[in-house]
Length: 88
Image (cartoon, rainbow, N blue to C red; front, side, top):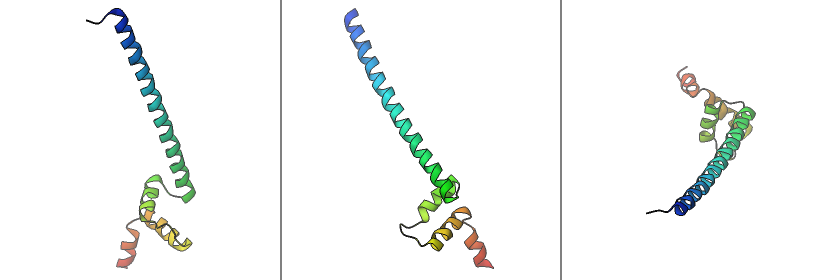
């Protein structure tokens, strides 16, 4: 049967674990916020929405010429455009 002292020790230990958990969670949330801010900035720099940027990242290669990069951006903005122009 736990004594009053052991209950207090357990409570303090639990509080320390809770504090560590809260601090770690806060740290991870802050890192996520920084990452999101960086992605949002990148979207603005590329002139794309966040969804378009995600598609752009999937389509682009590491080294693209300027014209190729602009074409990938265009496809990212309107994925159906190449299909529509092929029908004409």
